[in-house]
Length: 72
Image (tube, rainbow, N blue to C red; front, side, top):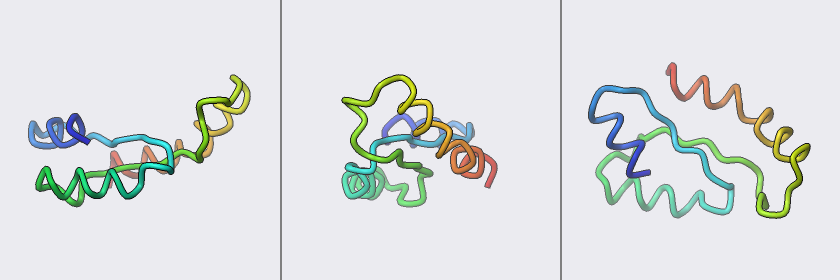
């Protein structure tokens, strides 16, 4: 969230991507950083034990959300 907020302050569209396990933590961080509307997209959890094919599928599932977050 820190990087996303920093880029947004600089005028560069940004989006945080994290595991769905961190939805609440991301909201807390965004609030603490003063940018509750900072864009974020979550990939399905877990990711640590996903193989390459599973990670590609998880990434494919969020591409549209990332593009929407960057262009909204």
